[in-house]
Length: 163
Image 1 (cartoon, helix red, strand yellow):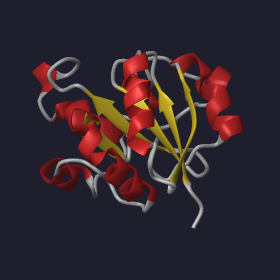
Image 2 (tube, rainbow, N blue to C red):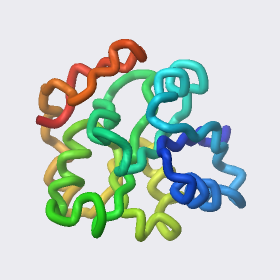
Image 3 (tube, rainbow, N blue to C red):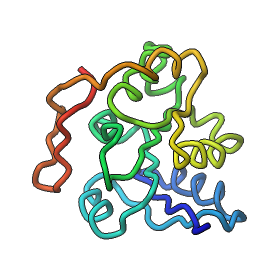
Image 4 (spheres, rainbow, N blue to C red):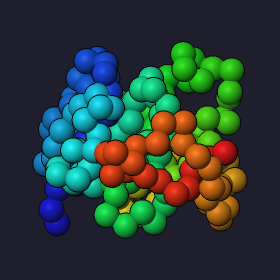
């Protein structure tokens, strides 16, 4: 079995360092690239990761949650500090991300413990997140919407996401 190719999207050096340390000792993963949002088009089209880890602090993080069944696009796991970025939303940010097309959601506070398992599950075709959240969205269709920042110029136009 070949290594799972993982990329991280963030401007935060601490986030990128945490991602790197999560996969440092596991030969089943290949951290292929980390970059800010601006490098996303090149990353997806040239590097072609299997799984993309998106820092919830990037601008318009739900826009980066690609639709399920997106062909050659990487699966997305959105990582967020629930007490920081999304405190007032409770589990709604997780539901929104999964409905937008993310394959997984994970609080950064549990990243060290769960990130490797989350990537393996998502790469295996499962949704990752709290059971009650995954149960709510598992069989729902992806909702059409207009992303906050369309990425047509980067070749990342997404016909579906969360409204």
